[in-house]
Length: 402
Ligand code: AMP
Ligand code: MG
Image (cartoon, rainbow, N blue to C red; front, side, top):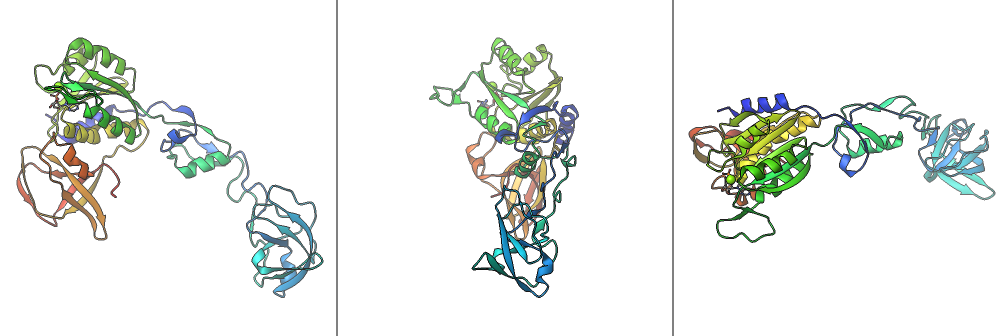
């Protein structure tokens, strides 16, 4: 039996970044990693530009702190100036418009007083060359790399890429992840379970976890506990970058998944991990495909995904694997006895005094409903311990605290 750390090491040694693809920027490219340098094809701004609504003029005219000037032109954004500003003159200008020749400063409209006969009184004791002017190419130059390979695409990268004409870029794609639930007792969520049946909660939960981790879930439904059905559906799943199976991986008579995987050429690299909830978890490869057989118990499935599957997905997307851990102080005494390191559903909170952790009321791996009030898992060591209020525990973060 492997430790969690050993098992994770095996997973990470076999997860590889996917081959980059070209993609049009859209909602589904958000959060992906750029797989190429993106250079600008324009200077920005493309001309010396006004940063304020006001008057473009010569700073030399304002040495006395104010002046009365003749208005020679009006320059809205999107038009080009036609007149040269001489001493004693000013052009009315709007934010974003090009600075006319001759002018070297813009005084904001609030410091200007319109007079009759196309004249303006300007009061600006601090006027000097460059006031309220953004110089051409101050932000970026033609040919300059503005977003580097490896950058995560956030809304601001979208904006910069759009401004340099790159609405199609090469990115690390989302891994396609086939999800297959197994079990003769499992029925679709839309069905009312008959005697001895339960609904397929893991399938829907895995779909959510895959999507949250950045992957693209492909839902394969339910396979029955017979080799033929499993074989057909797993084969279908092996078209994807990763297959996640739920259930059928432990040592029961109808736990047929390991045998069928072996038959399909999937090499199992581990089958048991010393942890709770969990333990029966299979990881195998049919390169470049990764296959996870997660335990059927819902909370075991939830935890195993976060510990092993999510890091693999992150590596496939070119990101650091995680998982992410924080040290947090217990908010109450928590006596606990366990024979394996236990990931205990907990509420993690960021307070003024740092992270705190509160183990929730929970009765074990089938209790998914209880886990609704958790947002993290506190790691409790094996043995019989009374974890004391104020004591620091390592906590697995799976989402942002709120
Ligand atoms: P197994 O690993 O197949 O032995 O399943 C362990 C436990 O998890 C059993 O109680 C199953 O009924 C339950 N289980 C298995 N698959 C699912 C599923 N897709 N959704 C909810 N519970 C499941
Ligand atoms: Mg089963």
